[in-house]
Image 1: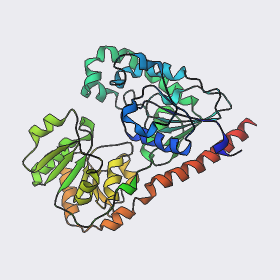
Image 2 (image 1 turned 135 degrees about the vertical axis):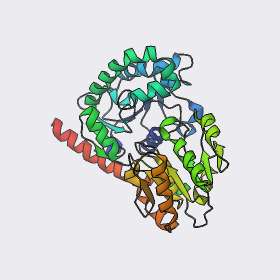
Image 3 (image 1 turned 90 degrees about the vertical axis):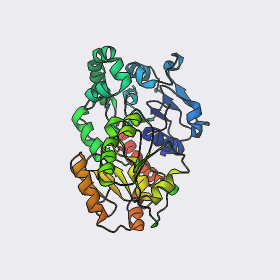
Image 4 (image 1 turned 60 degrees about the vertical axis):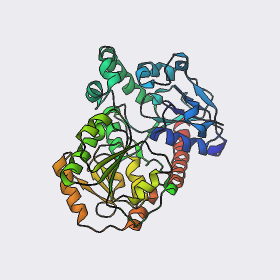
Length: 372
């Protein structure tokens, strides 16, 4: 029996804000357009690409405001996923960074979980979330008593997964650390066709992303001030006001830009500054596909995507002095936009689909042999 003939279901944590996990679900949906999608909360207006999909939303949809503030309801999500019935499916594919991996399936069902990250807010970043993020900080008296219970559930839920896929080697290590499970690395897809390289660069440096504390935009602003670098920052978020107060005259905040404007910004920039630790990181790949090298902190998913000296440079310490030194090294080197763009072609959507289908076929065969 061919994979396409099997009954397949897709699962994701929520469909309220377009992000990396949602991009992966879209790829799975294109591979299996008839497969229903199960999720906790769904904002139809934010996801026109799923207008023809059969989306099953949990009982959380009946709670007023849940779709607009899904983070506040994550303690209820484990039960929401456990109530979903997958008894009729041969294969279930989850795209998860929260509770979606905790679904319950039959012994004969193969559950493959594409893990973007173990739950950050209950594991290694739990203290940061409690201190820096307003929803968690203001509700700490509610958050802390359930934290231990969610952590225990998450660890046990990981045992229900038959096969884990990690989106980077960094996440592979974290899955091993917190779930004691092995995983296979398959890098997530990037829509590289939207971006084309150009050797016509301005003197502008660029930083892109949501302006939250862990992304460390404060570092790029500090370095721009020290070096008088022309820096454009794309994005919005809770740190915007503080960053504007700190920024000197060479820093320009562009806010949210359209999908049509972003490729040109990448293309014309001298380099992308990427000072944070990400599980994978789509933004550097978009920049490199545009022929723009990246100056990145040497940690996280960036280690999987940036080729030192070809498509970018790393700095070792997450501080301004280390980033300044990397910028100075970057300025002394000539960069080839075509080589930068060529280095990331392996991260295309087509490559992802081919690799995933091959892996799925192999996993299904092994699963059936194990049950025989």
